[in-house]
Image 1 (cartoon, helix red, strand yellow):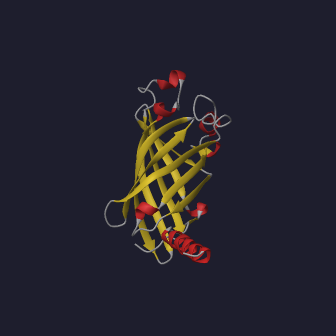
Image 2: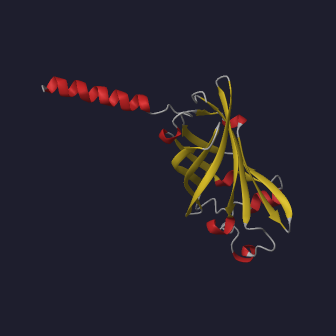
Image 3: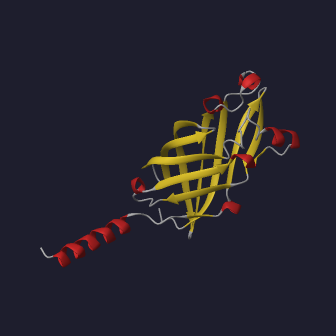
Length: 189
C-alpha cells in the first residue's frame, strides 16, 4: 500500500469518526432553569441558580455517543430572600469563594423509553464528587428541544450545611434538583 493510499484511508476513517459524533446542542440559558427544593422544619424552601453553562451532544437515536457537561456558578444560588441569599455563598453552605462552580460530567447516556434517557455521571459540589443517575425527558417542537428532569441528592454528601446545620431534623438532608433546558441543535427523536 502506498503512502498516499494510507493517508487517504486515514482521512476516510477520520471523516467517518467525525460523522458518527453528534453535533453540540446550543443552550438557551435565558429560557432554561435549574432549581432546587429543600425542607426546613418540614416546610419546602425553593431556590434556583441564575448562572450555568452546558455542553451537550446527543443523537436521540444513538444516545451512547453523546455527552453532557454542566457548570453551575454556586454564587448565583438564590432563594428570593436577602437573608438567605447572603448566607448561601458562605463556607458553611456552598463556599462560593473557595468552590465557585459545581459541575456534572456524564459517563454514559442510555435510552429509557420514548424520549427518555438515563444520564449517569459524576456530580462535584464543594470538592466532593458523587456518582449520580439523572433521568431526562426530551420533548421536541420543530428545531427546539426541551430537556426536563429532577433528581435527589444528599446535601451532607457534599458538605452543604456544615456545623450546627448538619442536624437533619432542622434542615432535611434530601435536596431535589430540577431542571428545564431549552436547546436547539438536537437531532429528531
